[in-house]
Length: 286
Length: 273
Image 1 (cartoon, rainbow over the protein chains, first blue to last red):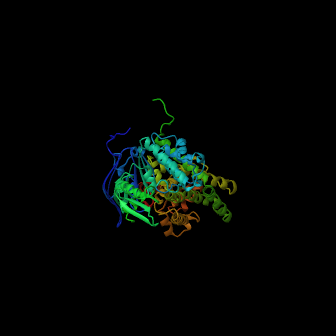
Image 2: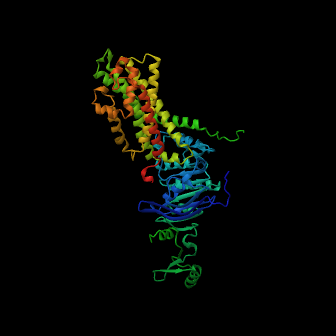
Image 3: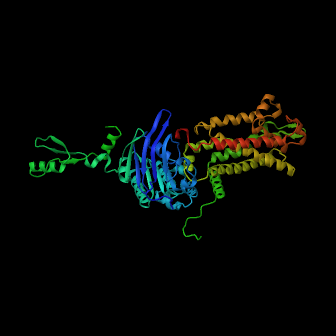
């Protein structure tokens, strides 16, 4: 189906710049998203996530840099390119007096080989709302409708801009399963989020963006060299105070302490920096 | 080629346009306020006018016969210009336009949908207006095929100009909330200076000149040639119905509206960059 080779990345960005007046939103971003991967763009509000993604989607003009998405410059994208790209924008679309079924059917017909609208509606968990007017939906349900519209054209590449805003925990888990299914079927997915656990649960790789620049690109596990970071071992001493030691060899330290106690060490914990610790350090909040 | 999947063949461009139109009509029909006000407003206006001015305008012609032309024209203006210039910013604010823009939908399909909706609503609304006027206020419907033909092209050209200008004007309002405030005065002023509420030639001449720039005056004038006796032509500013000029100026506004639509239409809000 695709004219691209497997080696060619789905998205290649270099030196991307965008300013709104004096406010620099994106300050020289280099990025590569491989085919078939789930790539998360993580960052606080106002970091430049949406600007970056909307340039990749062809909604915004850039001031500088080169951008290639599925082999084309999104600024000059044609209908054939649009048919291969699915978009779930930030915020919810309001279709007022139309029903969920009508909207999904209507969008499906714009694509050359769409998915079955009823199946898509069921997939996003709106089967019992198919005949409901969209203005009667809750915020989370409207978001599911947006997701349905993003995937109904069976895209090769799917953009999701903060997709789970307004979801309850259960809905978020269901959504994660949907993303894993789409990924397993070969869809390349670019996801922006400010939920760390979402990035950790879904992404093969993630980029942390702060003040318009990428501060890290990594797998969630290796972010900020987390695996090799010093561990903190803490335990309760005989006097009842808590002792704390940072070490790069926690196993040896625990063995030493255990030998001293001749058995169980009271209140023993061994911790490494969490993804959140690493992330907050990166975006300059710690 | 044999069908091996459940997926139906992708509809052709024409079918897409028609389906967009069907969706627009469906949406219109479901918003009850819009239906009642758009459909009934011109008819209510003619009831008021015919009740206030129950006499003759002269030459055995009653006032209804004169004011029906303004009411038809203003009905088309409200369906084409006002409703679109208010509705489209609302759809832009609600993110509908941005979402459509992200699909492979050809851009013109969206406009085709609006035009189909406007045409259908315009026909129904005009028919209601004519029926009420003929049944209750002694309106004489056009008596010759030639007059019906004039009626048809003036109405069609007029509603086309209004529709295209309504789509073009939809980019003026920054938000859905400001749209009615931007659009309503324009429509209201045009109605006053174009001879919808008064006999056109009784207006000050500078006002007549200003009105002559805009389409509504020419729609009214063209419709007067349909509903008034030929003897009334001499009372027009030009001394005749000037049907050639009517066609030319309405046509010119269609072209201007189309160019504005193509060059200035916004699919996203200002804050979308």
